Length: 397
Image (tube, rainbow, N blue to C red; front, side, top):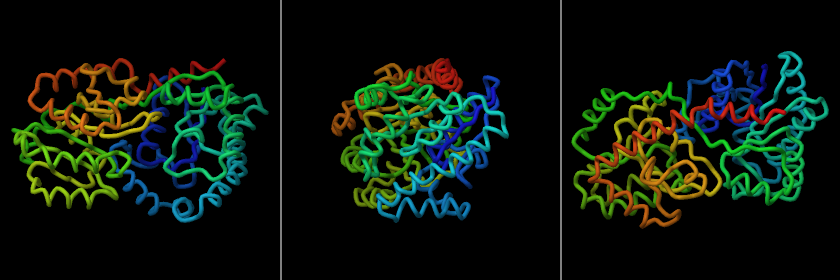
């Protein structure tokens, strides 16, 4: 089948991982997939990303890319929200022209689109021309967003029409699906398809991991790891703030923090002030090719915060590397992680519970190993990208 994957993202960071994951999953099932991206935002043209690559780094690369993409990036940062949303609405016109051209030239049989707010032209055209179109829903006007909406009423009406008239919908969590059902009442047939991992990128390499541990002088330590953007909504700032008060009581513990972002310097200063630089290591930006090795060098991982509708990509990447994670029990996470079997849950937003659960595992090497092993098996059996591809194709009539 000839499939067109259309998206209106920068194609970097976690977005790029997901886009290429689904694309490769469909190709592994024998289908031909063409990507229709913003100019200069083709994730297939860049090195294979991982979600662990800092989103700030991804944005920097976007600014260094094509003039069109650089202009769009600046637009999202500096113009008022109302103006930005008007541009999103206006983008339906070039999107429609590009879609029609691509469908005709590539003889497309199925359109798969990463849903974006105010993007209605593709569903309208597909419905008018009897082309099946399946939407992957990672955003919505019904959930809390980092960037609040201005034209909320318009966005809600457009989204309700889109969700009703698409051939099918793919939600990243059951909570997200329920929010859509409650908010829009009538939606197209849908499936729940959390994120996944590409096992060709996350290969277990004990020798490489041991070599890195030796280089960092942590080979005889228990290594708790974090990989991702240093931003407030990931909770890494408050996690470090609390950990510096406790980590001296656990001399065998090292916290390995991989990534960069706006919170990096304040976190670095807090670590230095507390005098725990020997136990909390900041690597800064790491090349995406090395991310798997860094995760492999860890004994278990920490995800301090998430949200009640998203499917955090780094969770699947840690699990793919046979590392269990201490994670908040938001429903999308609890749908994936079985407590004490494939990870460790703590009550979401309970910071002290997070610290307590994390520290309780320091001396239990056997549990660290067994849970990590179980996590890898779970990914192998249930959460590779081919599983996502099979789910979305199941929505076709």
